[in-house]
Amino acid sequence: SYDLTQPPSVSVSPGQTASITCSGDNLGEDYASWYQQKPGQSPVLVIYQDNKRPSGIPERFSGSNSGNTATLTISGTQALDEADYYCQAWDKSTARIFGGGTKLTVL
Amino acid sequence: QVRLQEAGPGLVKPSGTLSLTCAVSGISISSHHWWNWVRQPPGKGLEWIGEIFYSGRSKYNQSLKGRVTISVDKSNYQFSLKVSSVTAADTAVYFCARDPSPNGSDGFDIWGQGIMVTVSS
Image (cartoon, rainbow over all chains, first blue to last red; front, side, top):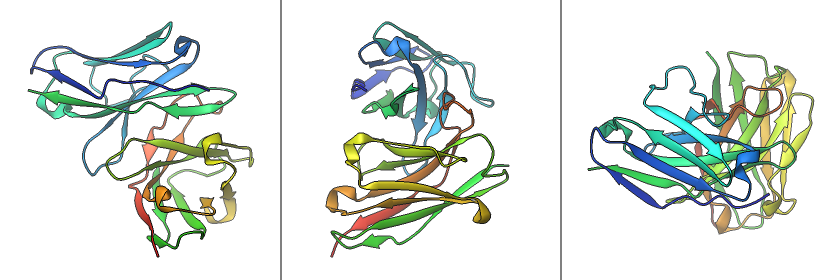
């Protein structure tokens, strides 16, 4: 098991690309998922198995995972994308861990 | 449509045991899915608590030091969480969630609405 480190905050202008990173030792050897959480709501899965989008998630959300870093990329960011984002790693032996979360602000 | 619904006391006394259930509807709890508990202290991030497979196989967050037990009740289509020896640090919104893959690799695609539990005398 290990810690997952995310930047506390990321800012982006509407229409631009936002990248949120998640770092952990050899994270690329495990699957990474990403969740979006808006105030007072339950989290929503936006990426699983590093780069797969669940049904209903817009194509502007994409993911990658290699080496020690997983990245969530939001292309053409919209105001409604403003939320907290959490990465999660899955290791088949030790199960799961969340990153500390990143607040995405769309300025 | 798969739905999860948490239930239980909203207030627990220090040193007591926190007990919650998660009712599963829209799918059999005996499906080959992993049923999870996650919590979120006020103003803080998500913390994975543990999970259980329909067969009863379970995994826990080792940081909770053996205070956690998760069980599945197939006859009542629900799974449960118990946290013993609670302190104020256990005050949080508790969510139940599902990973739909048999090996647990697909992330949590369904979440309950969450239930706030406060530990206080």
